[in-house]
Image (tube, rainbow, N blue to C red):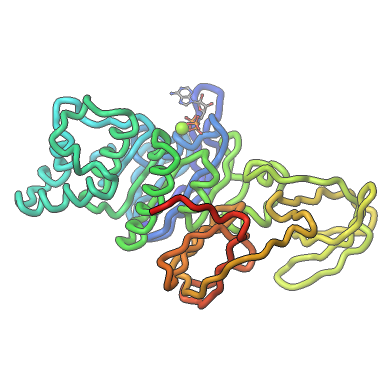
Length: 362
Ligand SMILES: Nc1ncnc2c1ncn2[C@@H]1O[C@H](COP(=O)(O)OP(=O)(O)OP(=O)(O)O)[C@@H](O)[C@H]1O
Ligand SMILES: [Mg+2]
């Protein structure tokens, strides 16, 4: 049991509530992400779990253990909470080499030299920093230092990991790659992870569940796909992607499965239908969210070439889904529309637009 639980947790700085009555439970082995605009209270929430900040209200527990309770005036210092942490400012030790930085958590746990070497090099190669093992830490770029900090947090395979924008200084390619690899490792080791980002793409690709925060409060919590497809408010819809939101009027409302309703709606110059949650009646004014990737121009088909193969991975990224298909021509990567995804293991046909095929030589 390595859950993280927050009960009515608040943090006031003077009269300002940076975090305001947050209730949250991160389940064992879950990857949960706090997402929200700058200043909404993400870092403050994480720092309270870490014990770097004391909550002014509520109670925080890690596993069975209460680590902070404002009512009881109980507070356990950070070093006793046994968490792995990677913070926004990558605190790596300047007087050590890259290798020694990553080895440090293993040395204080008195692991053998052979085990330390093996695990440090594995952790460094995960973030593509193995060639830099003997470099003094200050002789690294910001992104490289951040990668060393990630390797150091992972090297002792902690049960609970707190990460505050750990990928923010990486370039786009490394960011996606390190994120995807980190997610695979987190799943394999079952590390309970509380992650902070303001990058919605990252939040969607990595998380089991996402919490959308705004002004210190939780607006919505759920799996990425649910929040993306079924935002409970316009604020959440517009924070997650850049959707069209059309004004419309309800013509007819019919209740369907899972508490969903289907509305016939009309707006200036158009009519159609939309699904939603809640109670609506004819005449109600509503907003209809339509995401750009779900709108198409008609008549844009082109002759294509095809391959048969098996789906080996499928990652939800919001606007699209990254699918990898093993074929006789090798592994093919494709971005598909994120609705109706193929299952991993499914046999599929991949098609490419002939017009897009370009010769580059070998
Ligand atoms: N030590 C402090 N003293 C006073 N106010 C603070 C302190 N730390 C944070 N705040 C305020 O609390 C609010 C939440 O800050 P926090 O750092 O948690 O935001 P965040 O969601 O992590 O933002 P970002 O995405 O920019 O990192 C902000 O309004 C911030 O100014
Ligand atoms: Mg922050």
